[in-house]
Length: 530
Image: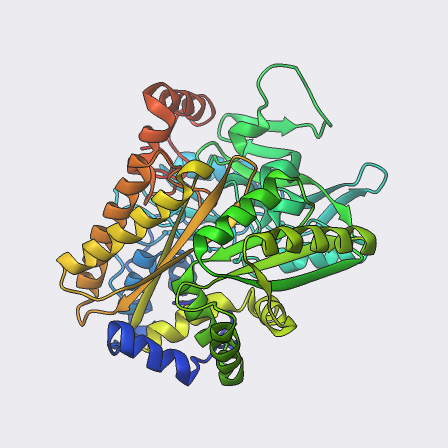
């Protein structure tokens, strides 16, 4: 059963190793656990629905609660404390495009707003209702979860947009194919959510980002249906797919998506490579990318994340080996860990591994024992569960990410981490902050920053601390010329910074499309643009 106020399945947990508890206490002090608001108490406090009764809409309070928030830090503060200021008034479960049009008619007659709901994994406020006079209807797409067609000749698969990562892959694997899109939220997030937030999977270097994989689909808009044919290429005007990619539910509801699939790889392995410092590793990663070596993943942690990752492994022997062996080889306090992925046929994977490690060695890299890569692979989708146990231990954790050209990668990473530390120092608080390069391109890379700090006794204080830090870090991203979001979308949290990237005319263009498709402002108000 899914957690209502945390990440993932209630039956799955990721215990904190004693080594990481000791480490956190030494770096940022002891955690301050806070009592969670009981589910029954929160449900009992939910007000009556403002929606007119309908057979297709549930107004059950528990269902409304379970569709009220996503996975952002403000969402966690609200759900854990029970201080939730708004709920959807009802939840509908359309199972066809026709059902969605029926919901539009119902919402129009009820004066309601509609929030599309996929896997509920948004970390920037995509699915949170705003506090407003109009009733809110959440459209949960979980019933649109089947493989509709598979064109094996063209390698195109069409799915209902509500299919989640495991269900999508399991349906493809039966036919010998894979999409290969693996964001860290893969266990819960959905194909439709990936498309409308321009998601990037962990191995996008090999498989492509979702905009590379999304070939076409069907969107139900308040103005009528929109079909995007799956064509290999077209010069017939602007590509309308690009308007749906990243549209965040403002234009309508994506009901099905056609994606480009591949045959299952013959080989897929992950390897650890240590560098003397992060800058040496970044130079190696850039050279590998610009040489076009066909690896599937290059994930480079800075020294702080490398140290934290070793402690999180819970393997004291591994930590001991790292400290003794690496120190003896001259990889000391600034050492940085690269996780290298290779995917494909045996010959291609062998070539990619040899070529990539040869470049790494020229930059002072040394290949680690196989346990490093295997441990990362084992925990790649379990890591989000750490958020539950860290919160229970009294620590908040949040992330932010951007992408910049290679010439700005190092200074931007330093500036973001520095801004976070300074913001916490101004609050007289301690913080653990670290970063990694999560995706690389020939012209630049994405920087993914994580920071942890002890919870405050007052949940609203924790939220205010987050707001101050988020603002400081986001302002640095804008000043450095980076994107406000490389892979998480805009939602509400990033909306104030969108104009800096798109410009006034760009925002007007987005608004013009919204006005054409949703003239009554029915869809997902306050997200992306306001």
